[in-house]
Length: 186
Image (cartoon, rainbow, N blue to C red; front, side, top):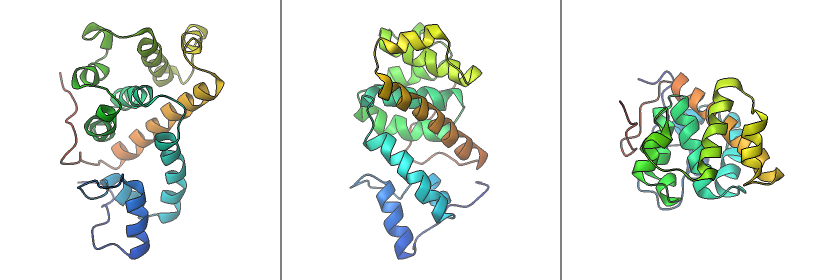
């Protein structure tokens, strides 16, 4: 049971419009529980929408790299809710297959799937950020081979944003969406 109940239909017209903006066109299910909880505070939801939509729809990182980072951040944070949403929708659309997604949730992803140098650099950076909130020179240099300044700034914001989303979903005790990919266990 979530600590704050998500809104349920029928929604007020302004809330309905706002929630529909958060979801991709043609999605066959209700807006995410996370979005429906956030709309208990419409001002906060509006402020969060700008950054979230910007990172997902207008980012400079390739979609596969973005989803790799999101999967690793949410896996390391133990946020099964957000990991499952992305694993079911945006990650496959970006070309991340189920074996890679399961591996990303493992403490040592390279033990189960071969990774490119770029993927290895991304996962190592996420792990360092998760563990220390910093990046060592070797981690930064490994990223620098693949990304320019604007992409590196976005990468840091992306990782921090999804750590925040993990705090939010886990702090609220949100249960996974019925259609989401189950988080790998053991």
